Image (cartoon, rainbow, N blue to C red):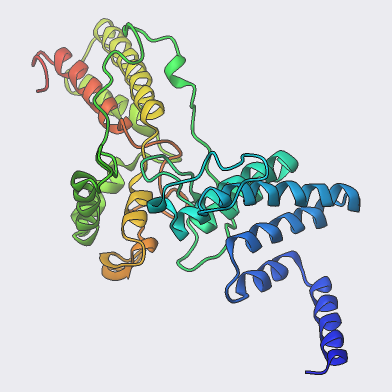
Amino acid sequence: MPRKLMVVLGLVVALTLGFLTTAARRQVAQAAAGDSVVVVWNEETLEAIRTIRRGPTVNTRALAIVHTAIYDAWSAYDPVAVGARLGGGLRQPASERTQANKERAVSFAADTAYLDLYPTRRANADALMATLDQILDADRWQPLCVPTPPPGATSCTGTVQRFLTPHWRTVTPFALTSASQFRGSGPAISLTADGKPNGKYRDEVDKMTQHSKQLDDTRKVMAEYWADGPGSVTPPGHWNVFAQYVSRRDANTLDKDARMYFVLNNALLDASITAWDGKRNWDSVRPITAVRWLNRGKTIQAWGGPYQGPSYIKGEDWIPYQPPTDPAPPFAEYTSGHSTFSMAAAEVLGAFCGRGTSR
């Protein structure tokens, strides 16, 4: 192709991109075949430059910082490269120098540098990270995009979750001696101590997909009844509804109800504190993340979504039987809040009903 024609075409493309909307520019960039994760973060930084509108000197510093962070993260996974700031001290063993690990390292480095430069664009960075599905640790809680994007979506059009009441284990309890008094042994993790895939972790993920595949009307009603999501009285309120039933059934006096609800709700308070201690201590992954991570690139049989029965879907598209506006609560999985609330409340109500413990 003649050089003059190439220059003209280049100018046409540049002018065209200049008139495109932000969304269209992003679509053009994402549609470009073979774009690396470096290009994705470069485009995100350019979008911040377009939006915030600082001078060229400030912008060149921002680009240099983001790409130095990216280079240093990448260099740890190269056999000979030396980082600009970190030298070669972080070089990873050959077994860790996979494409996936390089992409994760680059994205987290870019994300950290980008947010230091553009703290007001956290939502943009979080949405990009969610789109890239950069799961740094298959055992750690990952915020989701809400509502759940449809399969194949390349951006988050909603909001990215933030951990609900992360400080809750520091709340003063009613009867606990400490928030960690009843802390368990922890959930199954993805790798064993010798670095091999953990069969128990795989078994738990397989159980989730099996339950999903077997959803029928009865199981769906049970799931909806116990969901206790946004707009409901939530799990502790649900057990107060049960307590109302007990009060009416047994014709409780004011004296008995005053005592029963006092014990019930302070037991629920302590349950919330100890459950959140576990959630914060292990920061464990939600099922939606574990299933998608372990089955990525595979075809699985599971619930296919609203108005669908069992379907063959991509593992990375798996969703729990939840509404798109509430795909999973905004906090870690283990210890289960539902289970902890329920056991504490069942013990209290069982005692007030004169039946001893509920076990």
